[in-house]
Amino acid sequence: MSLDKNDVRRVAFLARIRVDEDDLEPVARDLNNIIGWVEQLAEVDTDGVEPLTGVTGMTLKRRDDVVTDGGDPDKVLRNAPDRVGDFYAVPKVVE
Amino acid sequence: MMSDLNSLTIAEAAAALDKGGCSAAELADASLAAAEAASGLNAFITLTPDIARERAAASDARRAKGAAMGPLDGVPVAIKDLFCTEGVPTTAASHILDGFVPPYESTVTRNLIDAGAVMIGKTNLDEFAMGSSNMTSYHGPVKNPWTGPGGEDLVPGGSSGGSATAVAARLCPASIGTDTGGSIRQPASLCGIVGLKPTYGRCSRWGIVAFASSLDQAGPFARTVEDAAILLGAMAGHDPKDSTSAPREVPDFRAAVTGGVKGLKVGIPREYTMDGMPAEIQALWDQGAQWLKGQGAEIREVSLPHTKYALPAYYIVAPAEASSNLARYDGVRYGLRVDGETLDDMYANTRGQGFGAEVRRRVLIGTYVLSAGYYDAYYVKAQKVRTRILEDFTRAFADVDVLLTPTAPNAAFPVGAKMDDPIAMYLNDVFTVPANLAGLPGISVPAGLDTDGLPLGLQLVGRPFDEETVLRAAQAIETAAGFAALPKYLGGQA
Image (cartoon, rainbow over all chains, first blue to last red; front, side):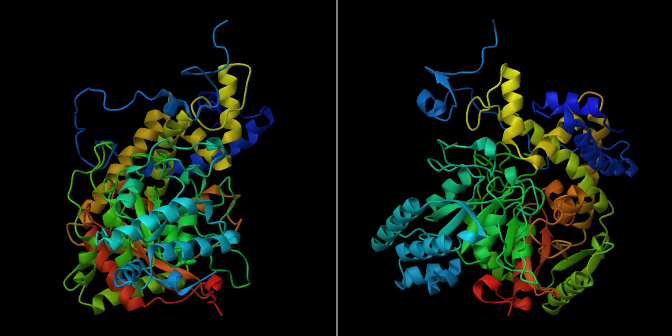
């Protein structure tokens, strides 16, 4: 499988990363180098093998669903690039 | 400004503090002065002199009352700028975290504060810990204190390059880093120091800027195996805030160091002999096996047949997890915002300008391998190969107690090299990545010099949660190697 300009445009949109039109071609070449290299995994027999998602072998612990922290909007919002009152501000989404 | 205090190990500094030979304040000042004088190495993104002096004074006050807390109380340490530190800028060496000041402290750095350690600053790294040379940092490359045969500047390795350089240049006795595919062990090897990646789950990941969550693990850098054991003991422990943190007691790692290797079964994985690997690395590896044998260990050849697939599997799994983890950098809640007409434009502009080339590359690959139609072919396939790699190790550890390998396929290389060939750069982690995929503890110990006079490390990999065996085998290598060479920066490499 190999990526073309359209694939890069689609993936860049999914990742919300601006890639200029002129850069689509070189980025596709760059990604194809790496994708081509990882495709050697096809040589490995993985029939009947379970995928490994983590190595701990632990089941996640449950805890009570209670509030243990919070109530400090100023601390939470202190790093916000833009805020209005106790809210993060973003460009207008709805007309 | 170097003083005798800068040459102390943790164990020596602790002894000097106990005997009144020096104060924590003097140690902190010596470290800060050395770090300021070493600004050309670019090991630090932020120095924290006020915090250092305050914590050192508190340590001296504790000691005066007879309430000193242990061997780290009053000892200067440097922190990779991937650990969130309350009130101190945390950048992950990325433009996208400009101005971010965490309102909380990571668990590992909290544990160090509670052990009395004195933070002197936040160290440089590859952006979001993605790299093997420290070249991808938004804050510029770090220089290795070792220089090339023609006097050229060399990389310290990566991603924890600043933490490795800080210890190798004796700016502080120890530092901490993180290791997702080799980011502690590879720079330790390239800088001639000790670096340890613990078992996945040994140290809490809470408050560490996430790269690949199923692989990331924090660990120590130091000049001796004993010091690494001391620091690991303070960093480790169960943390309810990290659901993958192991609910286990922390053993006395320092005591394990002196255990010796008599009767220990050491495996030599034959697949780690790589085409094109320098003969001197093969020779050092053979020498390492002889050193262990000479101290009573039994050497056995073992097979890890899927070794060559570890790196390509890693370059699917790690970017996939990174693309998901880095989705949070949206220009809304912290860090850089680059405006756009719509919300989507703002996201794309912020992330397009905020991430450097390697981070963009990995997020795009990760997004691709997780996208509809490719998920099974790439991501699930890589996870199945990961199972095969874990099975290889499980089988090997039925026969042997620890594995001995080279840490990296090369010594330190010139600043700027390999930057136009990502796969050549990725190959630096060929010997370290398998332990991450399997979650195993590994350590790099400086073992010798190559023909250019540059340090080379040997790696020991152990069973899950058996850092103690890894440490005592590492101590045996350290004792036999007697590595005492100094980098050019400290007047060595004559």
